[in-house]
Every structure is written in structure tokens, then in C-alpha cells.
Amino acid sequence: MLTRIDHIGIACFDLDKTVEFYRATYGFEVFHSEVNEEQGVREAMLKINDTSDGGASYLQLLEPTREDSTVAKWLAKNGEGVHHIAFGTADVDADAADIKDKGVRVLYEEPRRGSMGSRITFLHPKDCHGVLTELVTSAPVESPEH
Picture 1 (cartoon, rainbow, N blue to C red):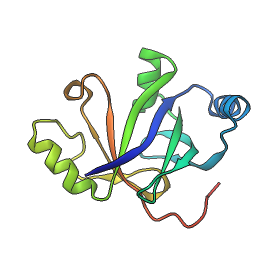
Picture 2: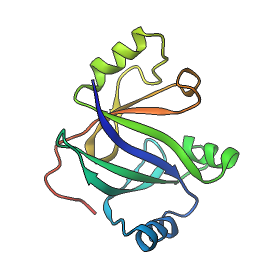
Picture 3: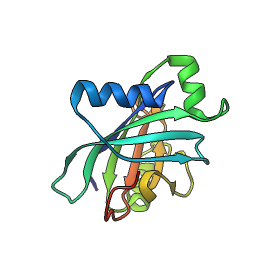
């Protein structure tokens, strides 16, 4: 089932300034960055550490690229801060189905493309004690992309 905390998503207004804060304050470096047009965000993944299941744990910094994106709407309501937590899994399809069978609403009928070629889905925060929760099956990573 779930094997690690894959990442913590942090919504921000200015990705470059937020990356610099985490670099200067904690020494975290950008492992990967991309624009996800479907989700309307520009993001940076800051690698924290490797995990025993062969994956890694990250901070995912998210800046909206358009006003109608989910992250832009969330920022307008809540301001900068923790947006979601993501758990890693070897099989996002099976784990999402299992969790759905337990009465938790799964937000995507089929997993979508996430950061670094991963497959993702989200669980409704009202069913997860107020926490937007993401399930992630990572794509094999050979080298960092910037």
C-alpha cells in the first residue's frame, strides 16, 4: 500500500522567491522543475532525502500560472502555505480503488500525469480530516531534469 511521504505541496505566489528561501534557509536544492499546463502551475521539487522503497521525499512548491487553476483559487482563499500531502505507492490505481471502497471520495476517475512523469490522484479533504491528500506512483527517475 502506501510506502512513504512522497511530498508536501506548498502553494506560493512567487516560485523563485520561495525556492530561494528554502535554498538559503535550509540548503534544499531544486531537483526538478516544470510547468504543468493541465493543472495550471509552475512547480519546483526540492529533494529532501531518499527513502527505503527506492523513492524520495520532496517539498513541492507550486505557483499558479492562471487565475482559474485550483492552486490560484486556494491561494486566494488561504494565502501561502501547505496545500496538500502526498503518499507514495507502487500502484496508484489499486490503492485509490481500495481507499474508495472504504468510503473516501477519489477526485479523479483515472489517475492523471503529475510531476516528473508520475501518475496521481487526489482524495477529498472532507473525507481526510481536512487534508487534501494525493496518491503518487513515481515514474522511474534516471537523472534530475531542470
